[in-house]
Each structure stands twice: as structure tokens, then as C-alpha cells.
Amino acid sequence: MLRRAQRRRRGTRETLLQDQHCTLCPADGTKCSVSPQLVYPSDFRLTDKEKTSICFLSFPDSHSGCLGDTQFSFRIRQCGGQRSPWHAEDRHYNSGAPMSLQREPAHYFGYVYFRQVKDSSVKRGYFQKSLVLVSRLPFVRLFQALLSLIAPEYFDKLAPCLEAVCNEIDQWPAPMPGQTLNLPVMGVVLQVHVPSRVDKPEYSPPKQCSHENLLPAPVVLTSVHELDLFRCFQPVLTHVQTLWELMLLGEPLVVLAPSPAMSSEMVLALISCLQPLKFCCDYRPYFTVHDSEFREFTTRTQAPPNVVLGVTNPFFIKTLQHWPHILRVGEPKMSGDLPKQVKLKKPSRLKTLDTKPGLYTAYSAHLHRDKALLKRLLKGLHKKRPWDTQTALLRRHLLELTQSFIIPLEHYMASLMPLQKSITPWKTPPQIRPFRQDDFLRSLEHAGPQLTCILKGDWLGLYRRFFKSPHFDGWYRQRHREMAQKLEALHLEAICEANIETWMKDKSEVEVVDLVLKLREKLVQAQGHQLPVKEATLQRAQLYIETVIGSLPKDLQAVLCPS
Image 1 (cartoon, rainbow, N blue to C red):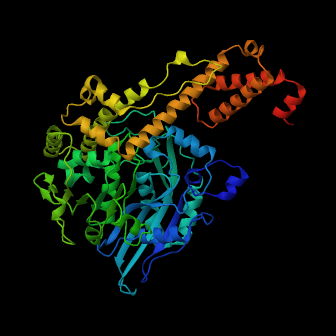
Image 2 (cartoon, rainbow, N blue to C red):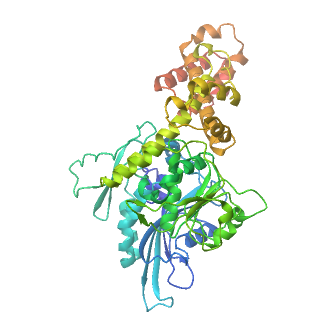
Image 3 (cartoon, helix red, strand yellow):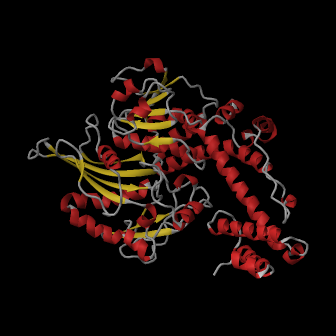
């Protein structure tokens, strides 16, 4: 599963970690400083700055007091932007994967398994060590399950164990959207389905796939990425809708939790609220004062960035007091069947270090709270309903809320697409009409979210604020790019359905050569999975190119088809 550069050079098949750019980084914190011990595979290149960031983020800070074994995750910016080239496999994976699960081009995810136990034989009085898996894919459930198998064995047997595991994992197949993978490691087979963008959302726990007579019987993971949403949101269930709005609008938010595990899970749960909409802002599931971007995020000389920041050090309460929204959560405390809920508080009530749990914000939600949802969740607790069912209920509510908000935007955007009958073979395709916010807002009267959502409130005000957010910009750019590609594909199909020989009769050599160049450009786009066209259309376009070139003088043929 580890990326082997030499295998890529030899042209052998891609494996899961070759495709993802993953690595295992053991780190030691037993001494008075943290340091990386080794990196698997050895050819995986990390800058010194990245290694330092990974080391500091692979250990809880001194305020957490995490004894025993714990798992959490982080996300760091890759130094110097995207360094490694994109391969055809990367584009193929991203073209089929949901937006939220696409490979990150400029960030690394870190998945940590940390152990701390008392040990009087060492200077600090306890043994502490971490095993970190670094990847470009947000497969948190899969990688946590993998680390829970590898890390305990590694802490006992050290390097030889990792080498053996790496040899096993290196045989894993590349992740393909829509496929179920059987991944053998350390005598266990992990079975997991890689989601595809054409998959229908599941409202109940997915059924186990056929074991296909595998021995040993596989450990079936219900998801590569989804967390237990109900457990993560226990202390904030009464404010889920407000938090959904803050995520939708890309508002800066600090999550202060007692441990990296709670911090990272809360941040990942929050950004998952917007699915299937892609989360276009930055987010850091676990962030420390040692991070290289500490000054960038804490400066008061400019507005807070659009980041969801997970922290555990109370020092951040003082440092980030100027941020508009701070969520302080503590260890879960039961109040009847439901965990004690954090209260909505004004930012002015923030105190240094001893701040009580609460959502500190001056934001007023645009939509009315869905009281029926809370009643259904409470009823489930009374009836001892399984937590995965509670999570499915909560996830369904958030999914339908996001879809109700996005569907009117999708319908309006589709109306801006030129009619297919206006696309002719020998003219430049017509332009997509501009998105006019006022026209869209007027359309909500008869085609708004009220058609699919029972919630009342100021939907217009929410859309107006959404237009100013990074998520609108990201959504619009993506949809406009897809529509432009669809236009190009329709134009290519129109050319392939036309009579090319009739068109060439009265055309100059310059016009014919121009057609060859344009067709070649479209073919290159289509073959790179950037145009949604059928294979038959591509073959016909190639035939047209050959026909057109064959009609030209020999000297032009030599220029267009050099030997």
C-alpha cells in the first residue's frame, strides 16, 4: 500500500497507497522533545517543515492528559503547494469520486495512533509514541481501522513489523469509486466500499457485502470515511442547525475540546454536514501553537480566515478571542437520557482558560429550529435505539436540508445552459448565460426550498449571505466548468454527426487545418476524462481527423503528421 517510485518507473500496476501518496511515520516523544524516527516508504519525500509539523501534531499537548491508546487526525498544508505530478489514475479516481472524497492536491491528512503509559525507567516518567499514516485521501474510518491493527504490534516489535506490513499493503489495489475492496493485512481482511458520485445516499447502515468465501472472514467497515455523527454531536444536538448554517456560510469557527480525539472528530463531523456539497474552506481537525501557520491564523491585523480550527489548548481562548464563533465542548455529561447540551452564549462572556462549555457567537440563525428532529432523537434514546440508527436519522436530516438548499440553485443554473438545438457543428458553441443573483432570488417564490423542506425562516437572507461565501464560489466554479465541458462534448458530437466531406468542399486549407487542430484539442480533453463523451464519438472524431488530413496537400500532411 506504500508508494514505490521504482515500481511506477517499471510501469507495474498501481496499488492503493501508490495512488494516494501515503506513508507511515513513527514518532517518538519519550525524550524531552518529539522527533520522527523513520518514514515508510523511504522514497516518500517530506520537507523538514512538513516533518516538524507532523511530529508536533502527532502528540496531544500537555493539557490533554491522554493516558493509554488514543486515535485522532490532523490536516496540514503541503509546503510549496502541489509538488508531485497528477497521473491519469488520480484524474480517473477524482472523476468518479464524490466531491468530499477527492484526492487533495495541496494538503496532507495525518491519521494518528498515540500510546502513553507510565514508565519510571524513562526521564519523563512515561512512555509515549505515535504511529502516523499520512495520506491525500480523507478515508478516516479505513485508516483508523488499519492503524488499530498495525500500531499495537509496532509498539512491541518496532521497525521489522512495519517492513512486513508495508510489503503486504503494497499489494493492495488502487481505490476505484464504486468498488468493494478486500484488503489483507496482518492476518485480517478489511472489506470496504469506495463511494462513487453516482451512489445514492444511504439513510440506514449499509448491508454487508458478500464475503466471497474469504478466509479469514473479512472485517466489514460500513464506510471509508463516515464518523458516528450522533456520538460526535451529542453535546450540541440543540444547535446542529445553527452549526449547519455556519458551515454553509464558511464562517470562521474554533472548536475547543478536551482532547485531540474529540477536537478532530467534532471538526470532521461539522464539515460533513454539507454533503453532498463540497466543503471549500480550510479546516484543521487538530491544531497546536507549534503549527507553522499559527501566526497566520491568530493575527489581529486582518479578519479571521475561513477556517474550522480544532484545538485543545485553552491558550487559544485568549489568542482567538477576536474570532466570531467559538465552540467549547467538555467531556460528555449525561442529563437524563440526553448528554448535557452546551448553551448559546454571547462572545463577550468568553473568559481566559476557565471558559465553560458553550457556543459563543452573536450569529442568529436564519431558519427556525427543527424541534421534531430533537424529539425523534430523544425518542430513539428512550427506546434504546442503536446509535448507528440515530446517526442515520441525523445524517438524513442534514442531507435533506443541504439538498433542499442546493436544488433551487441547481435548477436555476441548468436554465442558463444553451439549448442543444442552438449548437451547430461549424460554429463556436454558444456561451453559458451569466448567473444573476436577483433573478435567482425572484425564482424562489415558485421554485424555492419550501417545495422540499418544511422548515420556515429567512431563506432569502440565507441565500444572500451564501452568495458571499467561499462555498458559493466553489459550487459555481465547479458547475460552470461541468456545463462548459458538456457544451464542448455536445459540440464534438454535432461535428461527428455532420457530413465532413460536404463541409470541406468550399473551405480553404487554413479553415481545414483549423478544424484538425480543434478536433485534436477536443480529443485530448476527452481522453483525459475532461469531456463526457462516448467511446464511439471519440473513434469517429479520430476518423474525421484522418479523413480531413488525407484531403490536404502532401506538405501540409507532413506538418500535421510528422513521422
